[in-house]
Length: 108
View 1 (cartoon, one colour):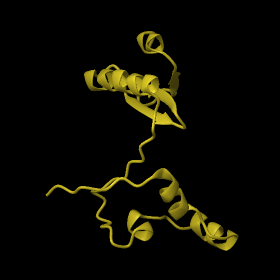
View 2: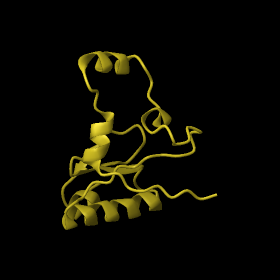
View 3: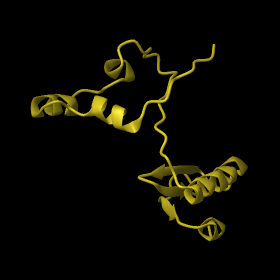
View 4: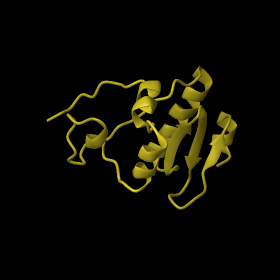
C-alpha cells in the first residue's frame, strides 16, 4: 500500500511544533512526541516519515543533486541541507563537511 502525504509548509509546521507557553515547553522536554501526537489522524506505526523540504537556490539544488549521485554510488554516506547550506558525510562516523562548490565535492 502506498501513502501519499501532502507537503506542509515549513512555517505551518513550525507553528504546530512550537509550544504555546512555558509550561507546555517544560512538558515537551520530558515527553517524547510522536507524529500521531502532533497530527491525531496520522498513523503512529513507525512506517511513515516526514520530510521538510527547503527551497534551495539553483546552485545549491545542483550541489545536492551531485552529492546525492555520489551517495548512491557509495562514495558519500549522507547528504542534507540545513538552513540553505549543503552538508555531506563521507562515513557514518565522520564529521559533517559543508559543501560550497562542485570542487568541494571533488576534493572529498
